[in-house]
Length: 326
Ligand SMILES: Nc1ncnc2c1ncn2[C@@H]1O[C@H](COP(=O)(O)OP(=O)(O)O)[C@@H](O)[C@H]1O
Ligand code: SF4
Ligand SMILES: [Mg+2]
Image (cartoon, rainbow, N blue to C red; front, top):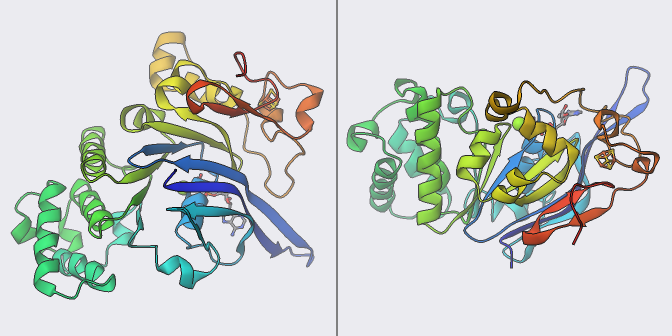
């Protein structure tokens, strides 16, 4: 059984335009994917695809005008109320945690590092301050923050970018979650620090038998740090499967163009760019939303898109996927 199962999740933003007309942006359009026990899933796609929104929905953090209009999320076999805050709170922050993108906006600037780590544990049921302090120290050492004892006394602004991101990993893991969601956790860090931070995250997730979702627009990160990947376009997953399988053979044309535009492929095969712009979420076309940008599009592509299943749980949502369908 999967640890997490997201089934046909639809999220809309409903607002009124200047003419007082009701407008609906269909930001998530039937997102479905699973995360297995002990697995690291890479959720990848261009900006605006709906990756962060998916994370917020999983964490029960969506607020109006965002509305879950359809779908469900199963976590540890139980349905998680993505709208009902009370229900989500029992899980959120303890069983499912978020490692956000920006340390600057995520750390409390008015509290010392150690106090923040202790407070997070106390908010989730730890009754002993001494135990919480000991665990905070251990966690700082595990994320390889040098001299943890003196760093416990540091203020967030005293940490470098890489250290602050390590602190966010410590915060995300301190309550021993089953699933950690890291939303673009290393954007803005230089490449060496990025690799060190992601190595640390993956090592700790694997060592503690946790699962993780790494959200990124960087396929290099997916290739290095993830076991499986789900490719998102216009609020839906268009392809998912084991990372090696998907890199070996892309079944959906969008995944193909994403991989062709990575620096490694460009060095090999010349410059290729993912052409076109994301579709208008207020006026999504019927059928396949990638059709205006797809070189394989046919008339049938404006009808509902079927699921094509291949070996090793590799799936693509396309009328004309590459390769023979199982
Ligand atoms: N209040 C809003 N009203 C309408 N659309 C919104 C609103 N907030 C976010 N969106 C849209 O939801 C889509 C998904 O955004 P997001 O999940 O942040 O994308 P990603 O993380 O993949 O870059 C974007 O296209 C964004 O424009
Ligand atoms: S369904 Fe049609 S338009 Fe969409 S990706 Fe597949 S071939 Fe292209
Ligand atoms: Mg985002």
